[in-house]
Each structure stands twice: as C-alpha cells, then as structure tokens.
Image (cartoon, rainbow, N blue to C red):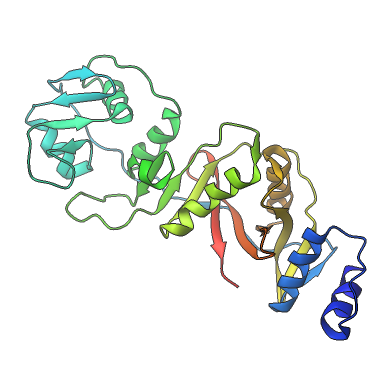
Amino acid sequence: MIEEAYQQDIKKGKDLKLELPFVEYIAYRELRLSGFVLKKKEEKGTLEEKVLECGKKPLIRGKLQGIWKRPFFYSWDKKAPKWYEKYWLGQHLSYKRKQGQGTFYDEYESYYLYEKNVIEKVPRPPFYQYYKEWRECGYVVKGAFKFGALFRIYERGTRPTNAQHSLYLLRVLEKKRYKGLEFFSVLRIAESVRKKLILPWERPSPRKPHYALYKGSFLGYLVILYEGENIWLPKLWGYAQYAFERKSPLFLGVVDRDTSLTLFRVSPLKLKQPYLLIERVKY
C-alpha cells in the first residue's frame, strides 16, 4: 500500500491519498528516493557484538598528600604530576596551560584514588561504575560537559602529551520517557563533534521494528520516529534487542518538521557492561 502511494506520488503526480501516517510516508519516500528498499519482512544479518579489549589497569600505589573540598581533591604531592603524565589522571597546573601549582582531581578521579587506598574517603559520585570500568581497562576517562555528555573516553595509553581526539562520548539516560527533541539532541551531540556516542543500557524484551532496510543487500531493521513525539526508551530499546538477536543493527529514521530525514545506526558494544553505539548515517 505504501509503495503504491509512493509510485503514485513520484511518477504519476496525482493527489496523494494515504491512510498511513504522513511521518511514516515521508521517511519511506526519502529512503526510496535515496535508493533504499523497505520491506515488512524478517531477516537475519551477520552483525556481531563489538567487544572492546580490556588492557592493563593503572598501577597506582602509595599515599597522596592533599586536601578534599568538594568536588575536587587538590594535591601538592610529587607523585601527582607523575601519574598525570603517565595515566592522564587529574589536571596538573591550569587546564591546557603551564601556569599554577599542584594537581586537581575531579570527584570521579578522587573516588577512584580512594578505592586504590591512595587518599582518605570521599563521596561516591553518581554513575561511578562506568568511570571505573573504562579506567580499569586502561582507557582515559575525562569530563565532557562542553559536549553535553558525562564522559569523553580516549584510547588506552593516551597521555596528555600525545592526546588525540577522544573516541567516545558516554551519556547516561536516567529517565524512561523523553520528549523527542530532548532525546534526539542527545543523538546529535556526537555528530556535531565527530565522536561516537555510547549509552549504557539493559537488554529489554524484544519488539519487532517497522521495516527491514535494504540497499542492494539487507542492512538492518528500521524504526521511523518524529522529532516531536515522546520517546519511551524501553520500547525503543526493545526494537534494538529484536535487531541484535537477528545479528542486525537498528536504524532510527527521524523525520523533522521540515520533512527532512536523519538516519542513525544503533549497534551493540561491550566492555564489561553492555552499551549502545550510535552513529549518524549519511545517505
């Protein structure tokens, strides 16, 4: 039915009489015009969950002299600049400057040092488990306030003297329901700074997506959304679980108010805990 409407709209130029929602049709039309084929069909792909290698954890021993004044621990200890140079732990001197004295540790780094028995007890920050997981596997984890995320994550072994651009932005979605614009702005974060966005998630019950997506061959499953609708995450991630169980990525086709379509690819990623890797697809 929707294909017939598409052919009528594109080739015959007749008035469009469509019983389906216009959001679905707009996405369908944009993808068809770009060479994609959409089918109500079950397929199985070859996608495997990407499992990241866990490297050596930082070797941090001894006691660190300093003082805690929330949310920072400040140290004048000689060990601090050595750990900064080797593990990019803390911020030595002023940020991106060679001025000032001592080393500051944010609340995540401070609690990490407390767990290493390096400093006295400090409060545990929220979502610390994600910081610890990546740090313990050798990745460098820093703040990402200016990117609208919780953490930016660098490749294992990165040092402040050889730092390249970070690999990932990690964002934690605390709510189950989001307004569309709020949720999709999260997805656009990584695209605007050319980074990959990762979201922690718990695997829900699977839910069948709207379409199977093809371009020559089967690409994955597709869900069509509108920028103004409310997003219920357990439902959305249920679509992802359905696709992953069939070794396929999930594509999110987002229609905006200008009838433009933005396409995102969602695939599974794992370190020790499961994550969703979300990337913009140019078509």
